[in-house]
Structure formats: C-alpha cells, structure tokens
Length: 287
Image (cartoon, rainbow, N blue to C red; front, top):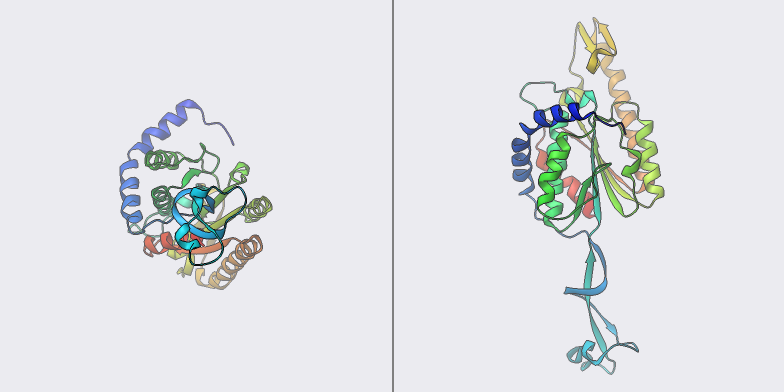
C-alpha cells in the first residue's frame, strides 16, 4: 500500500470531516433497524448462558454437579455453560474513481452507499460484542468508540479497486463491498487466497440503477472516470445486449468464486432501500 504524504493526508482529513456527521447519522439510523445477535465461537467455558448437560467425568468437582438433573437418573450430570469468543470482522469498501459515480442527482454515489452499509454493519456487530476493523487498517476492536473511529477511517480509506493482500488474516470474516467493474481477476484471486486460510466472507456488488439496466439510446459519449478511456456512439441502444451479457458474466464469475470458497455473493443498487442490503449482509455473516 502506498504511503500518503502528510500534506495530502491532512487535506483529505479536512475535506472528509465535513462528511463525518452525516455518515455517522445515516449509519446509526440504519443500524437501529437490526437487533444484533452474537456470532462468537460456541464452546464450553465460563459464561452466563446454559449450553448443555453432560455426564460427569473424573476431575469434575462436586460443586459442578447439577444434583437436580442427576436425581432423575442413575448418572451424575454437569451443567455446562457457554463461553463465546468474539470473532474479528474485517470490512473493505472499494474506493476507485468509478465508485464516486451516480446516474442521477437524487441518488447517492456507489461509494456513499457502500460506506453507509459498511459502517451500519459495523455498528450492529459492535453492539453484539464483535471486534470490527477495516481491511489493511488498524487492528479490529470492540466497543462503542470503535464506531466513530471506523467512520473516520472510511472517509480516508485508500482509493483502491481491489482489497489489500493483508486483508486476509486467519481468524477473520471478510466483508467486501464495491462495484467490481474493473478487471475481476484480482478479486477472484483474493477470495481464493482467503478461502485457503479458512476465512469466511461476503461479497456485495453495489451498482447504480443505470449500470443495472443500461437505459441509454441514441448518441452517447461514454467516458471512464478520469477520462482514461472514452467511447462515442450514435446507437447506444445497440450496445445494451452486449453490456448486459458482460455484466451477467461478471456476476457469474464472482458468484462461482464465492461458491467455491463457501462465501456468499449478493447485489444491491443504489435506488433500493439500504436496509435490504444491510439485513442481507448481517444474515449472511450470521449464517
């Protein structure tokens, strides 16, 4: 990952600070729609919740015996409680130039929607006792204060189209959110590497409705963000079938990679209610 010069980082921080309260407010409202559960590892150990009865074994103290349960049989039983170890969730949001695009002034950019979804999911997970962090950033932490730290980090996140290599660390679950319209092989490779480490993950593709339906006709000038590439056509409608076929193939490739890795893949467009996508993300992690 490249190092940002201090002067550039300060300028970005000052520009991002103006967007921090709206981002946090939007994420808090969205996160309030979901009651968090616990995604921790279930095992016997110290805790408050009953887990199971098991036959007493040599070494179990008399205090650990559940005499009421044991009185109903000839055996002695121990009442195990459940210990939960929080798992770390690592979030990544694409930040390439294309993510800043919106097809209409009344719709958020893909980046804005992705940031709100990522922070909302983080707030829900933090309420449930999870450790959450950004891929390639500071270590995942638990606690309420982590939500504000994540909001600040999201607004200063590197403008990358693919997750950093160190986003895949043992013991994590990954959530990758982006439009994934740039060359797809780096993403597929990342999913394969993460799966080889035993990581579970979720991939959500966020697109503008115009990218979903290609509603263009007549003479249109298509230009890539930053002006790196452009295509001038007098018959935009004639490009629709090929575009839709390529989009379908892109989704099939990502879906196949996720299926092979035991991951989940979903899509969301910025005209849809963000609560739908947040609920899907949370349920996929919970499952």
